[in-house]
Image (cartoon, one colour):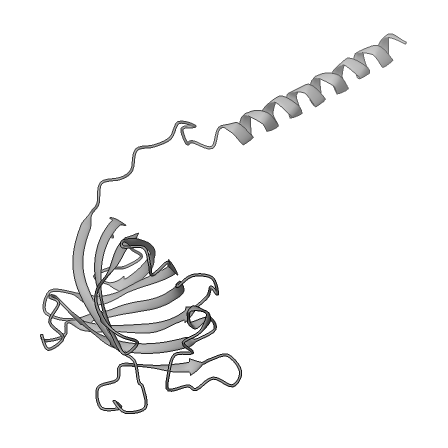
Length: 196
């Protein structure tokens, strides 16, 4: 009987040790539970990209085109109803250091956007800045929602290569200029918080 009690105590102590050690291991991950202050930016760039949507008449200047549209829609024009819901465009736009379309490009913005809401004018963007200038070589990749009617929108910087290897941060985008459905220029203020 005494042996059974000692055996029982041993099992209980082992079980208690297991529970306590498990709780301690789960709560001690080396990170503070307090909210950390935001890191200081390691790099900041301001670039402009110019998008000229193909409309059936401007093949020489077009830098983007519709590749998908709601059933029955014309692929040379935005749908014009329901805030262009369902339209998908791909682009290969010039990037400049200033807002002049004719300035020498420092790279290309390559990717796609699609209009994703029926009740308001909004898009989702996925694109990469391919930079090849004397100042910067490499890529910066972006992705996120673009509520177009908001003056300033934040889009995630999710990675990069070359001078921007594995970078992360925020790109604050605003529409700097537009001409109907054919041309728009975005000012992209890129603030990077992880630089290697």
